[in-house]
Amino acid sequence: MGVSVGVLDHFNIRTRKLAETVSFYEDILGLEKGARPNFAFPGAWMYSEGKPVVHLVDISRTEEAQKPDSGCVHHVAFVSRGFDGMKQRLESKSMRFEARQVPGGDLWQIFVNDPNGVMIELNYEAAKEIAAAAPAEAADEIGAR
Image (cartoon, rainbow, N blue to C red):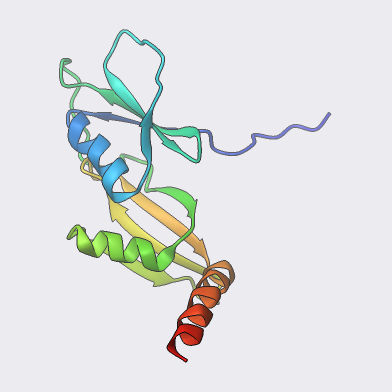
């Protein structure tokens, strides 16, 4: 039997800004707060497509220091859909972000920081984004006739 690490299951953020962090992942990125085991410490699990991918731990009742950013982890990335829609959402919420195209043009990216300074990278497959926009553009063109 072969050995494989597999795919990333979740990442964990220890925060003194639990409500603000939950709000960011819900309102900005579109994740949903969902079921979480009854741990002896407060927190929240944020779901994407039915999976708890962001685990938040509230450290406000502890002496643990709040780290100001991602620590030695530079960023966390998601495979995403809806590049233009996400840019519009971020702009409408006055969020600072950087959008760019990876050299070669196959991947579009958006970078945004959560309330704890954790850098989130959203990756969009350019061909899929273009194909998804094509039916809408065709419908607009037909409706204009």
